[in-house]
Length: 331
Ligand SMILES: Nc1ncnc2c1ncn2[C@@H]1O[C@H](COP(=O)(O)OP(=O)(O)OP(=O)(O)O)[C@@H](O)[C@H]1O
Ligand SMILES: [Mg+2]
Image (tube, rainbow, N blue to C red):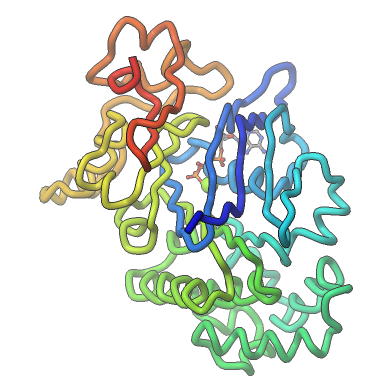
């Protein structure tokens, strides 16, 4: 059976305008998400993960600019080029229904003076008006709160009355009210303790297994979490994808030197290195206003060759399911 394509990004560039220069946060990114996948996007702080999450749903707000490329979403049986749709249209027919996002720190951004129920009313006004009326939405919200392990009556509580883990699950419940095909979660577990992280991961898994959502994008800087939930791992470095591989393959045999460094920092038995996490790789990521010529990772790469300082390695297929952007693999 052929896999159903849900979202496709083709050579997408999206930059922040800053005075007279650009911060190239997403710079030539291409990848596909298929039905049933949980795609983990990993990378250091500042590598462009949150920017990419907004680009995936075409939520482009100043100072962010969509420079070029295509963002194609499977809607019904049609493929819509989201980058050609006006924001109003996206808000009406796409956001919340076809794609939904749980932004980074969403659970802390809930205004403390409003009950959860009022946030749900706002959602109805902004996105769902033509899908369901408010009563139907409240009924559905109660059901979805049960689905994520909360009590239906929690919708009548204030955000501060819920623990962090409960709040995160409440946000996920609200994002999935209309059964969006694609759910994007930006660092949904980063602010939680281990027990609550597990609950959130389990909740997401359940939503997908029960086909309330079809595919999930899970963004994190924590590789250990991705290993628990994702089927595929996309590694970002300085605004670009450096590797895209099935989770099991990348863990057994990371191809890109950056992926290798990332994984070493996780599987190492030494707690010291573990604690330092990704910064196990010596050096720091480049300034995205002025990234290095050639491969952006070359100043930190232990395998650097001459060509790496001159040419940008394209993201190329090296195996049926694996892609890597490195001259060690595509000469
Ligand atoms: N509003 C903004 N204006 C200018 N530059 C921005 C803005 N937001 C983000 N950036 C820059 O864009 C780049 C990518 O940022 P982004 O937030 O997408 O990274 P991230 O991978 O999500 O990081 P983190 O792991 O810390 O969440 C960074 O260099 C950041 O400084
Ligand atoms: Mg981020």
